[in-house]
Image (cartoon, rainbow, N blue to C red; front, side, top):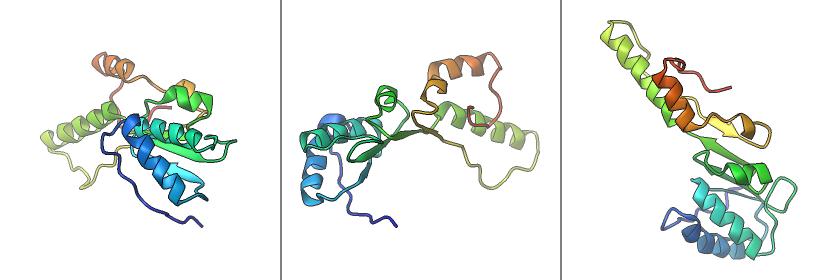
Length: 150
């Protein structure tokens, strides 16, 4: 039931670059319900553009905005950003090391390895494992499996 309206590109990959292109898109598509930004800084620029256009972003607002990178946690907590996806680079490392270790041990490995990502919302934002903490846990041997954080 969704209609993809268009794609706009952020020339600078930050909030300042996203805001003007999202403002223009909002003028072209006044009935827009949601924006999916490809990174959290672009989502922050989309939030600013929505507000500049008289829209309130958020689950209870006029427009839903999502990001990616899992770093805009304050905007998730405040409800401005509906969700962000953390690509969990530290978990990618664990998964790839496990595959390489299995190969070196002569074990069969799947042709494809899928690394989980984490959707972060208001419901789980306070349980997000900080990347620096994850790296410390890996170094201590406490994180060794290719499993998403709980």
